[in-house]
Image 1 (cartoon, rainbow, N blue to C red):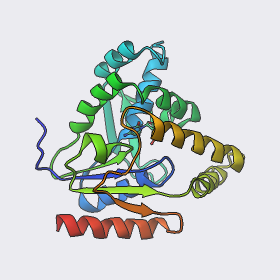
Image 2 (image 1 turned 45 degrees about the horizontal axis):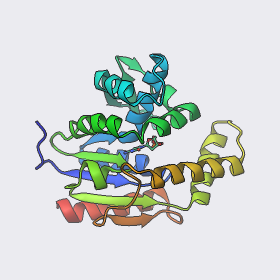
Image 3 (image 1 turned 90 degrees about the horizontal axis):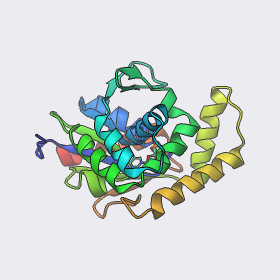
Length: 229
Ligand code: DC
């Protein structure tokens, strides 16, 4: 039974805007649960590939999604602060590949898959509270969230950040290619019919283009403290 008096902090925004890091830090500060909603779509893509379910077979994907046993566990590894488990297997690294991101973007627009995912997402609303990040946390899944933040940054800045992350891991990519794929993903997320990415009317919009992670964290924390006391 979901308790709607349990506070939710919804952090939405485009891919690469840093919302995952901020959500993790806010959850840690408040001792709240954490929901990485994008990871669920990535898991569905992975499970579909493992089970030979075609990524466009909507009824089969919805049935598959109902059967998944998904768990998130906090780790003390800053590179991967959240470990993600599918049917008792650690799939943290598998779901972060580029292919997993592409697969997630194919299954995410399917309405009946989103219906099943929504129930799962709402089950994360447990005391003392939840920080949920994604694309539609404030607009669809937790419309009564106590705090709604829409975190964004220019596509160029998000591409630069991703480029630096990959370079630090000795993975060589072209900045132009990264920018192109971010722009394609934005377009898919914002223009789809079901739960498109947009700021909720009651969200506070933060443009992090010229801000450090700590500055964004402080801004979000101030908003949260103002609302939750
Ligand atoms: O944030 P991410 O890259 O892990 O998201 C993976 C995919 O899932 C991406 O295509 C957007 C989609 N997504 C969504 O449709 N709704 C959410 N609440 C979160 C992610």
